[in-house]
Image (cartoon, rainbow, N blue to C red):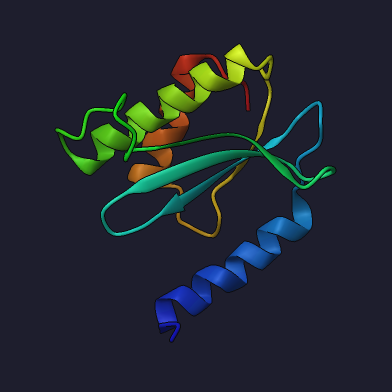
Length: 117
């Protein structure tokens, strides 16, 4: 059952998704944040395919440190994977979350890793 908090986030998510979309030349970097973990995907909406994914559950990302530190590491990891795949520009989709804390840390990490958005 969706809580009041989730219902508001999903409403904001629908509004955001009406305005932004990923394409082959500029795919969408979307974030999902759970209570314990954070996940990021780069999606081409024209073909409806996920190009790159990263999360703090992978072995490459240290599970030590604060959740914000792990979010920044996920941003750097997704940027490395994107650059390896030839993706340099993305559209950032905060997925209805407030651009604060872990979401902004992930975005900062992706920018430091070399992504442009």
